[in-house]
Length: 443
Ligand code: NAD
Image 1 (cartoon, rainbow, N blue to C red):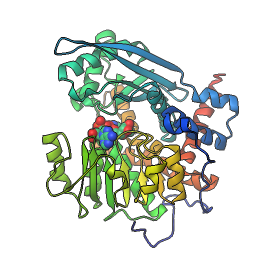
Image 2 (image 1 turned 45 degrees about the vertical axis):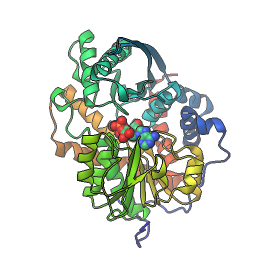
Image 3 (image 1 turned 180 degrees about the horizontal axis):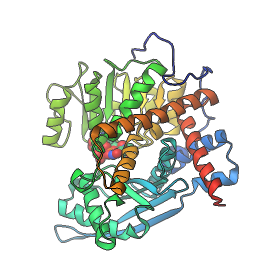
Image 4 (image 1 turned 30 degrees about the vertical axis):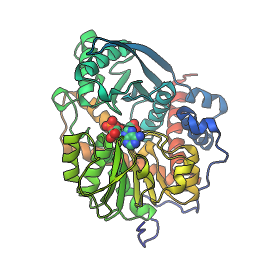
């Protein structure tokens, strides 16, 4: 990795240098490695310990407030009746309405959704948004489904969870395999019962009250964090060789934005496989290829990669932007990047974290790096409530302000408390939720 010559220097506020960041205690149990909710709770425990949260409050803050499980019957186009299972987990609302995406994925079981809901609680608190944390999803592989089947499934799921949604109660958004069209169907299905309520979901199409910049927000936020972190953590962005796992909303926008910032995107992958070109991939042409073929594989002039190969490719910055748990201890031993920026949620297991830390690889954690999505969702909700449209310039200006400030606080806390960036972020989030809980007199 092309580390710059200058010494580490915080951009906005000087912070004391305290030497190497201590790793969390070993060993990591098999359950923590295998179960996403246990993995998030492992980080929570370390953050809560650093924040000085008493044991009984730790149990309170870890436990989801409400978990809803619903059947989702769908009449498939061939006449078959499929009965799918959907969830909405509301984790914590001490700081404001529950907020979190909807995922359609075969691995979206209750523990995955709980993990993602908990992450949202800490993420909205780190970004200092007036929201709590939630997540929802349907355990399904939507890839082969027709538009009619997807629409039916979305409307039925929305109708079944609608009793616990509300503009000041719980506001869903897109996540894996859901997009602006799915949000439009959710808004309409909710509106059928409760009347026109555009602010009930974020990530909507612009025509229905969506915000400029919401689609690119997660990747744009990641770019702002990289810009702030590079001079402080002593790595170069210009000319940096970047590898991106996942080429959906977050991955493809990250490729587009980093390409414009003069990074060299050398490898990308999706669920079907990956491509590699050490001289840098022509991203505008790749975007066209992906639009036409629905995959990055088969793109001319590149070497083809097997699924998973991307994570250990020779590069400077690795951006996992697909599913969770992909970098475990074994993969972490083989990572060649100097920086891993977590665009996906919990892509690194606690065991992987320990290995990357021992190897001196910088990990920029999900709870701050991918917060751009929920930050601009907050702006969309604000615009819906005010019935006033912001410009793209204003959205990105405010996004940069929010996420750079969150990054600065995480970095300073990490130095002052001698914690990894991840545990520092958890410490900040947990302290804020704890304070809100105390002020409310909740227990
Ligand atoms: P998406 O559905 O638009 O894209 C997912 C991409 O990952 C696709 O290209 C898919 O082919 C690929 N993929 C799936 N499984 C894979 C595998 N095993 N190996 C390689 N690639 C694989 O989803 P998205 O919205 O871009 O979300 C990606 C990640 O970012 C998720 O972890 C999500 O929780 C996180 N995230 C998304 C947002 C958002 O605003 N959309 C915000 C914060 C975090």
